[in-house]
Image (cartoon, rainbow over all chains, first blue to last red; front, side):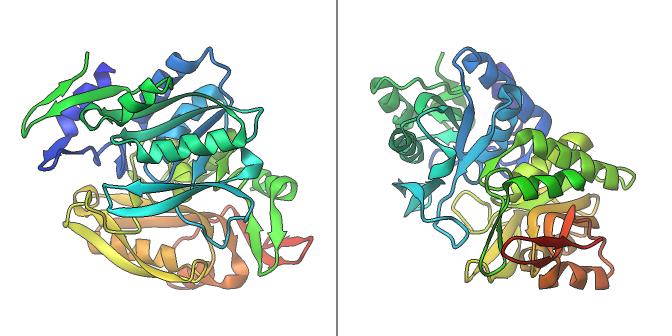
Length: 190
Length: 190
């Protein structure tokens, strides 16, 4: 997605440790007009697949999922990272190890909102080692729903999570795949 | 907002301890068409106030803020609940005690995205005792930005947080104020 690459070039910041900060438009402050284009792009890619639910994970995925859901006229469902008092015990759950934040957590989704009749895409801001995505995919499998595909706005190709999913036969639609990062340059996969 | 009250009557569930679950359309699974009406309602209430930024808190507020921001053609900024590696140290922060989850946390917002030139509204899904909202208001004050007003989709009037803010002269625009709840009935403030 050329608009995304231009946006990253203009507004993204690279930090040591292969950190790409896009928090001025994607995942802290959010440019709603840009997110609308992201949603439109996902719609173009998945519009013929009978998608009826957009799954994501709190917090950074929610805005992207909402922008996408508008095009599909489908609800968003976001997985929560902790079990709180306000969530029923009747949930699908899966464990995730986050290297970014150095901790382990459980993702949960209420069983009443995901079932075998659903055709789901999963969207998120980043796909790196893929651990969060694997947790979400596990939840879709538990529910019996059909996983149509997954998509990250930015995939860190060099961390291998996306390719591992592709090898398993999962359709991965990332809007930009970063194959290499240096202090002042990003190389995208063609 | 009559549509909201109808939606609560149809889809909301009341549990002991004054818990109102609206997770089928507002804060777990999200009805995007309904959220669009919420955004439109906020726009109607604040459209003449020069609002240029919509502030919220992760995670349940994000979808509401995005729906609102579309009408204002303004960016969304969401406060994060923990300090992670991916957030710069240059942040506004405020402590919040959450009675719902029985824990204390810090809300943070990157300083680069909020300044004295901003005119801000804060939106969230619920306003109960108001502790999270007070944290967000504190952050707006720290930044020097103008707080135009705050709004919750559902205010639990009987918990007093909204009225406390009103007494301090803050404009509070909740879309439904629950004054009393029983097992099978909700009384709204007129």
